[in-house]
Image 1 (spheres, helix red, strand yellow):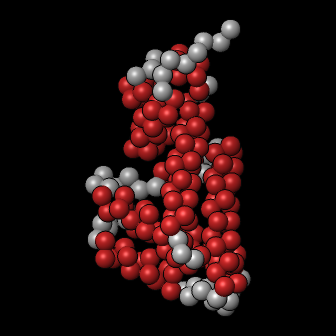
Image 2 (tube, helix red, strand yellow):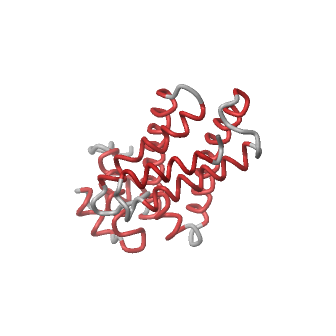
Image 3 (cartoon, helix red, strand yellow):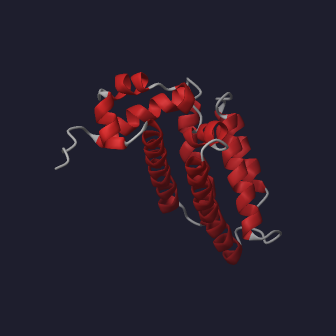
Length: 193
């Protein structure tokens, strides 16, 4: 009979994620993970499989947290255009308060692992498609109600907003000026209104 886990899985994933986020997948040793999680190696292997599987679990946890933040913005929005703005602005405080320039965990993963592991690459592609679909649906709805222009189709605009969102988060790694970052948001959205 398998042993019951005697730890908070979400907390372990959070601690492991922070190590992977700081050091990258390749720069993180099993000892780093033992130190960060408080679990011994055998517990990590028994509960998560391998270092790569633990990494993949941290990516899924990060996505789950990001999805919750998108949902928070969507619930507060008055219309699709407002929802897109609120998605950007939901991440603005974290960017401005990020003193150690952590940036986006997914983008760091994409840079390090996107071309090196097929499973991680597939996860990244799926995550990207889900995010694009959210933006595309919002844009299509906004075009239908008239708050977003119809100069381009919703998929083309979704790629623009997705790329702007990624660029906004990358820019925020080094620039913490809220006014500048707000202008980045404004200019990204200006294209679709």
